[in-house]
Length: 453
Image (tube, rainbow, N blue to C red):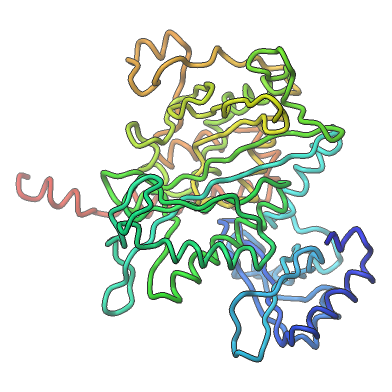
């Protein structure tokens, strides 16, 4: 139900009616910091009407990437379309709901450090060009056992593999319960299954517009963790928790629609891809090194982006081939609206609002610049020699967070997409993370060097 479109008064009345009918006593107001960490505070339902009318004030000085101590007053304004009952309750007779909020300054101006506002601004650019941006991310994650003190370990629940349906897949019921909880919150699910690595899983949400999907990604990650914790299990979206096996990615399917039609489809063109679609993918390939710090924002992200584990490393594209950064899923006659690109580098620990923002910005820039993509890569890019890749003009993604930060810092595209506040706060945070990492003495160093040096 698009409550925002029905009008604030009608939307407010519907929400208050739902709250009464379900005996909601508390409403959590959700927002996201610059690192993609979900934040919230709860209000009693008696304050809900006032929150909808005027927003609720809070101190933003301690929220990562928000305001300094001398400009800490912020307002969170609930988005009427995001009211949902939560599938867990403080008591059996007490309902709990949530609303996702936009962050504003006390005068009502949108706060440029709010990742949700960043995505809205990029989506407006697409709208002004006549496009609607749709995405369908596939988030992978691991289930791990907790130790006797309740701390997470890296011991998995099963020894299953890709699409396994055996007793080895001990997490089937966890996934099923998670799917039911997602559906209770209005999130459509296409499928769920075991992934390639031991105790690795995936639940795929149904394709939708990018703002709705970013909200859903935040909700999805919380629900996966909540259901796991309920059963004494730890769920993690860490990109590479275990050496030697596949890490977790967030492959993002993308398309642009114009006047109700898929702007990426053109019958009879190369792979049935319109010129606009080809320019979009060329933009992704050109600007990927610059936006990788956003789509892969942690030191650990680059432990996943190595050859041999189904994660992309090279700047190439292809039809169906899963060794490339961007692939075009096989076209099916009669399903023109399914024509899309899948970018395989992002990981599930990124900030989805910022991730979708930079992917869209890169694609639109490719269209604006009339870019032409290189020829699709034939064969497995991992198996090509360095000389072969050089001959084909296939570059690489940054090899670590420091390289990614340096490329992002010089990027006009990423700075424009994120806005100055978000851009600078993000880079400052990531530089601090890199310094912490590079100065830390690791177990690897102690085991490798201490006995011989």
